[in-house]
Each structure stands twice: as structure tokens, then as C-alpha cells.
Image (tube, one colour):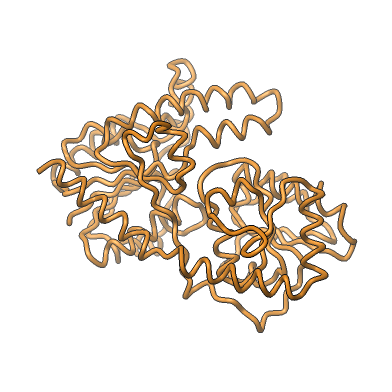
Length: 390
């Protein structure tokens, strides 16, 4: 099968959730199919990063987005009542080039990741699958609830426009995929057309327990530290949870591009590491993984990676909706600062509970979350989408 893949970001290096998903999907698909990648980037891509993707793709087409033109498009979107998510990534000249590439490639299937890229391909005369990945409008709605008054109305506007745009794309593509079934119901409440649930995977052979490790921190939280839900989670841990715990309890916040608000959290009890060359080192440096995420949408791979490494995990009911872990057996749940502190204290004082959660969490990830199994489901959808056009 010849696949034309459209991504709003260059898939490598992997420091964001959308890049993680498209990178592993391309890698798995390349073993059986011919991949032609079209990717945008708003920052330079190095030769080594380009070579990483070229080993999986027959062709790689990279288009740079200039900041000046991005800001112009965002201003245009404000007055034209278009979602910023669409305007940020769309340029008419790139659209014309993508149309030329698609015509020359004549793909069996176009795979478009995120509604951000949909405007580039929704009218192309080839079988098409749209990966919503998350219900972005839902993430914006949740973000608005936790935002300052000055920007709340703007974020709510984006949520409304995004929802209308997401639902409008249901008829423009042959098939639709998403990470979480609950997110799919937000976009297509009646279930027609169907949005297929394709979860992310975890490299279980890569994220292995490290029993020989000597963790320096009681707690660890990992993620892109410039992403709003992660920034809020980091602030919640430091401002709300740590004060309820003994003073010897320390916290590691690890991940790329820490926001100034995150960097400001550093103290004797809190280390903000920034980018980590091997993220497994960050997981292994904590005794308990904590993920107090109350905004955002979709599936949080960070908690699956932590489980795969044998870390007992505490997270919110919202996060667990997407991963489906069994509370008290595979994960501990908490939805307030006091509840998080209480669960952490339970784990600190109960070695058997830590062991049970670590073992059960690892087993759950092995059985339910693999990239190979996830991509096999995606392939079946591609084949079904091709049949529609034959």
C-alpha cells in the first residue's frame, strides 16, 4: 500500500504526544507499506532528524512555517471566525504544493494527523483517513475552566469554533480515528459516522523496570513542560500537594521546554530538569509517578510508560478514562490535593501496595498497549477505506 502521511509537526525528535504517535505509526507501517511523508515545522530540522525519518519513508517533504506568516494568519482567523488551530498551520502556497505531491504520488490512502492538517487534503480525490487523535475542542473547554479571566473568553471561542470544525470534517473523510473512545463521542455523539478508537502504544521492550536503580526523588512527573495541562499539573503538585506532605518528600519535574512558570517551581524539594536525553532515566529516578492532570484530552502516554517501567502511579479519574486501568489494582486515583497527598502517603508506608501496583501496571501495559497491535487496527481501517473507492 502506498501511503501519503500528513503531519503538522516533523515527527522527530519525540517530545510531544502527536509526534510520538505519528513517529511510531510510520515506523510500524514502513515495514509493510511505502510511506510518503509531508510534514510542517515552525523551527529548523537538523540533518540527523531528517535522516531518522528517511529510513522509514520513500520520500520526505518538509515545509517550514515562518513566524511572521503564522501571526498574520492568526490575526486573519480572529476576524474570519476560524479556529486558531487551523489558521496556525495553513498556508495556501503549501496547499498547492501538497496537491501537486498528492497527484504525483497517487496514494492508495492519505493519512492526515489532526484537524490542523485537514484543510490541506479534505478535497483531494483519494481515499482519506483523518486521525483526530484527541477531541481538541474538549481540551480547550477544559483549559478555559482553569484559565485567567483575561483569556478565558478567547479560549472558549476557540473551543466553540474547533467543535464546529471537528464535526464538519466527519463527512469529508472516508474514515476517522481517535485515541480515546470518550473523545470520539464528543465529536460524533450519535456514533455516525463511526470514529474508530486506535490507542497509542508503548515500547514495552524499551521501557523496562529498573530494579537496580536508586531513585533520588520520592515523586516524579514527566511530560512536555511547555504544554498547558502539564504546566498546571506541575504547579498543582508543588503549590497544593507538596505542602501536605512531609518535608523530606522531593519531586522531579522532567521534560522538554519547561515554561517559565515551571522553572520558577525549582527549590530544595523540587528539581526541574528540562530536556532529558533518555526519558527512562527520569522515570527511574522517582519512586512514585504522579500525574494530576485535570485539563487536556486523549490518552496520556506518560503514565503508560511509567507503568511499563514498574512505577506505582497516582493519577486523576480524567486520565484513567482513556487508559482504563483498574483502580486500586493497577493504579491509584485522586481528584484533589488532599487525595493525592493521601495516596502518596499510602504508597510511602506500604511496600506491598507499591509492589502490587508496579507488577499489575506493567502487566496491563504489556497486554493492552503495543504499537504493533495498534497499527494493525489502523491498517485494517485503511483497507476498508480503500474499498469505499473501488
